[in-house]
Image 1 (cartoon, rainbow, N blue to C red):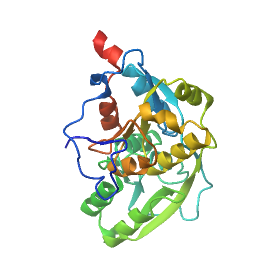
Image 2: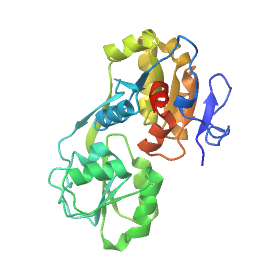
Image 3: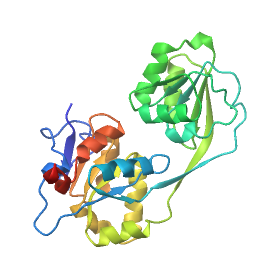
Image 4: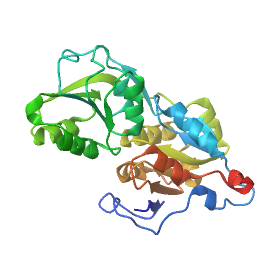
Length: 279
């Protein structure tokens, strides 16, 4: 399945946003910038955990990463029942894997994707399986590998997140203990280096990892008076749903990955043109 593209000002809407609308899209390295207008910076809106890792991967492609985390994640005090027996622990995010004091490390873990699985393993969990990168695949993995009669599922989430996932799991017959283990607060403002790079026209692309992050960044761009600068910025989204959330600004283009994996987003970005020229 090829990534799809929505040019700015095309009049698209959310009813059609999830279908491919163009032939396979080249990486940014294969697209020529206007003479004298080369831009080598990429805005990274992902919060920690994950922002530094993404920045390193972007730098390895020859781009200059500019951090602008949309959200600030913080663990919460352990909720009641967090360490109670369960047949499996479900992790829909990397942040949840870092906020599980007292949960037995021999409990089987189903993680939403490979990055969350790695985070769970780093936290000491010994039996970890990864789904395909989104909540639907996590629910499907649970339904295929777990037995509703074998005990409840522990679903560790951020505040305000994964209610639909809990509902889907209950629809498969599972008893679900949804426990909130971290909070995600919107950033108050764009970092100074990000503002400077936007005002100087240095940003070539912006990477988006969630609908909420997309909404927060658009609000911060408007707040800072730099929303108009994105007409020369390609918005690259981890899913069509995220791409839909980006429609409020006049991005140069909006493109979404065919699969919800960070590696697919990096492939969509591709190597920087000057790096490709040296290869």
